[in-house]
Image (cartoon, one colour):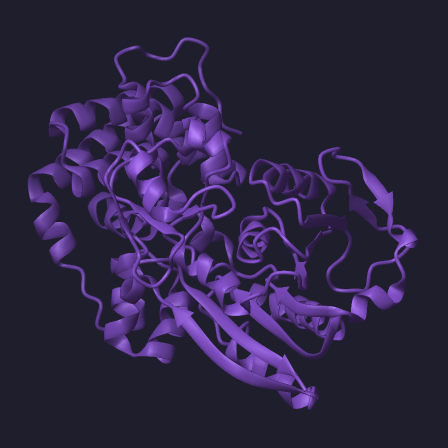
Length: 456
């Protein structure tokens, strides 16, 4: 358990103290990095909060490289180190090697003080390791790392070895290295202008930060500076939603027409549902399904904020047809009505279906600092089984001649290309209209797979 003293030393920089606690919560308690940071950084001023985020997320992402160098500098396996001590080493070494903003002595002093306060012993080791790292320098320590093999690249670019091997096999060495390197860079932040309220050019002019538009996605506004989206009155007015450009491509690939009936499976948190609603000019119906009542309520609130009155939210298991116990959210109320009031034949009358199932998320490693250390090779096969069942349910709800889009935010053949090939082999009534993918290092956005299918 992470123990925090009731009166922590005021000499330690607030951002470092916050980042240290986040590291310990992630690696000792299994906490999600973003949630841990939100809890720990609530009292920090914006500048300190931004630094705490860089320190915490960066040290979590770079754990593989940091641990390799700690073992080299300390001359002992990291598994033998007391967890509070290891957290201080990871945090201090990350700042020395990758940020280089503060004086080395300040970084070392704070790491030693954190180790003194939280670890049973060993702060002398922290001092010795970090001073040695400062003497040798980032150029020598990081420059000695190679990435000519999957194993070496996993260390240099701080990815699990199985992910490195998978991408070496998929893309070849050069592209795999570029992909892993990009995953350690700050992710692009984009906003989708809600065309039920405004347009991208108008939104860009109204924002207080520098932006640029995307020539291929009319709704996309890419931010060039830090921006507190939720604090903006434009957010309250439903003028935009934070969404990657890759995610925006999904609704555009489905390409719904005004007045159509669209089914969106696994729809929360609602970015794609409300995009579909906007592309349909607020007409027709988007039936958005999610099995988690809390997420469904959040989706309904998002639809209401975005003015997407044609979105209806259903609480149900996307892997099976809705049943009498499923609940439909009544817009604006946060309450539900029984699915039993809707005929089962309604399920086979959708013009378009979006299947956006849970996935391993390997295309989102830049955005989710701890995800690479959570997902396992076994999880990919387990995900594919669930994805196949959801895809089959979506296919069964599509009218003849209708269009279905299957999308994931992962870079994994078993969840993408192989799954679609198996589906088409088992479903002769469907044909493939096309496939597109985005890759972080190539497209500077999240990694997505999008397959467009048509029912004959």
